Length: 220
Image 1: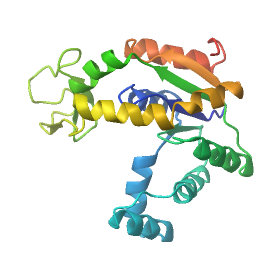
Image 2: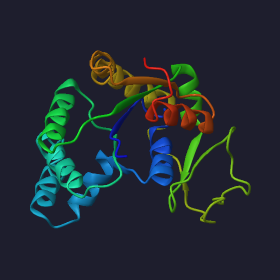
Image 3: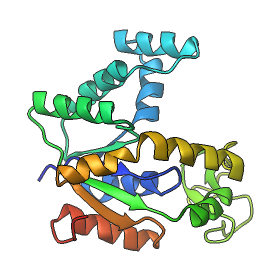
């Protein structure tokens, strides 16, 4: 069964981790705005050239371009799509709904990963990732077995995001609440919203998401 979903939640809520699990467990396709833009920029296609021109000027890529990239991805088909990082605004939500309608597809669920801001700050400021395979670690809750070496691939290319500090995170949270949190009410009104505890253990979060997608979990 094909299922198309949106993962909502503030920076650091764990959307990327849960998206990767859905890709592995269900064969879904993760549509990350950042990944799509980077891939388009180096693709050499007409859309890619438009993306490169905008980014090279230091400007934000327009909603029209992002929707165009998503349209290209939807044409490839698959076992369902995970929209990660899009939509961020009500205007983008309307545009995505229209695109899905035009392509004969539907949005089946919107998963909001709820978090406590103070706990989230503690989680993010201790986070680091493997630059080679993308595995995520944490100073307190998930350190590497050997200091400085990735448990999964053995790489020593372990990195921290420059904006994974308390001041930057609070700025990003404010931006999220201003622009993206209205989507919670938007999708609640459409009876698409399910809320899960984004600060629970990863397996528990995955189980809550699976219940939502299989129709056995509670609606918001």
